[in-house]
Amino acid sequence: MKQISKIKWHHYINYIVIAILTVVFAFMSFGGMLDSSTLYMLEKMAIAVMLAVSLSVVVGFLGELSLGHAGFMCVGAYLGGKISCLLEPFFDNGMVTLLISIIIGGIAAAACGIIIGLPALRLKGDYLAIVTLAFGEIVRSLFMNSSSESFGGSLGLNTPRYDKNSLFIIALLLVLVCLAVLQNIIRSKHGRAITSIRDNEIASRATGINVTKYKLAVFSISAFFAGIAGVLYSFSNYTVQSTKFSYNYSIEILVMVVLGGMGSINGSIIAATLITYLDITLQTKLTGNLAVLQDLLYSLILIVLVIYNNAPALKGFREKYNLKNTLNGIFKRRNDPARHTDDEAKWDRVPTKIKVDEVLSVEIKTTQSTVDPDRKEKE
Image (tube, rainbow, N blue to C red; front, top):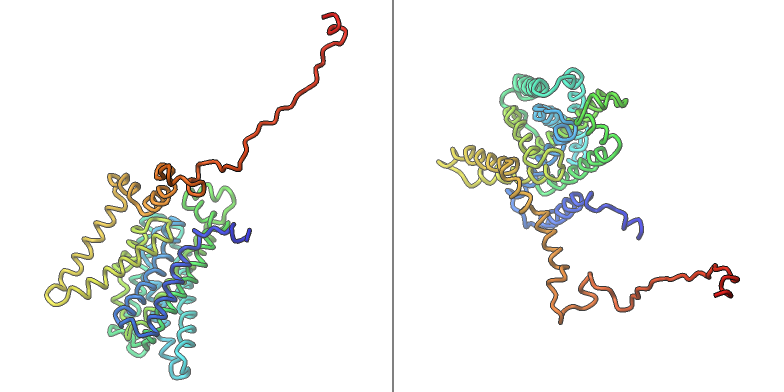
């Protein structure tokens, strides 16, 4: 019990919430209570969360601006989709094909992260953003101009669609794996070294931290999970097309990180979920002649959210009315002695009163007099 009481449960709240949602939606899916559109939305949410969390480590904790995340996802999507096409005739079980594709797609994306990271991570700020953006566009162009026999060319690569009733479960489980790896890194001594590089790279080098090693490690791990997200994307669609992985999608992933808060894993999860829900809902509701308003409304809503989340003039309002302060205020008011009348002021309800059986005592020690006895007799 003592070990359980020492656990910092707030560190695991995101695991608990995602695990509960996974179990609930799994029972609903196998019970036939979820339609295909909801299953598709859950898949896209899981993919977006993995992309946002993996990019958050680079942008929020390492402090490097990367715009090539869609390129790493593109590598995983195409290679994972191609592997699934090659393995499908040999394996009747789609799970085996999916796992092999995930491993190969993730490793290939991580290798690309190392290759591009060696020269690129020596750059700073806007220069690094330009290089990573160029990498994403180069990768997309290579797959788009490939032959139809290899990766489908401009028409895209046809891939097998995984079962809708179970793919989102696998995706959510992989999100838990992603969170476990990245959060354990951030909360370890390596995570402190990474954040020190963000705060002051010169001081980190002076203390003996291998800055290049940590930058490459973070970049490759982030690319690895982006590649896994790409493989999941290929299994959630019948065709993988290069137009999906343009620089606009990299910026959309970056918006999720910025909107959720720089250096906040839970914020990235919430922002990715909300943005994905907003995007899919607008595509579903605005059809026909109203389809032209999808991008306009989507952009306006994002602008309003970003302004609300970052405007200095709204800082006081955000701090006063955020969810954390609201919940703290509710629980504090429940235990406030002023809310209890004299008739209701029982000893077990008002925490500020002293129990009846508690006795306040003061220990008084007496000392013997050290007066001279001869002097006492004279008196």
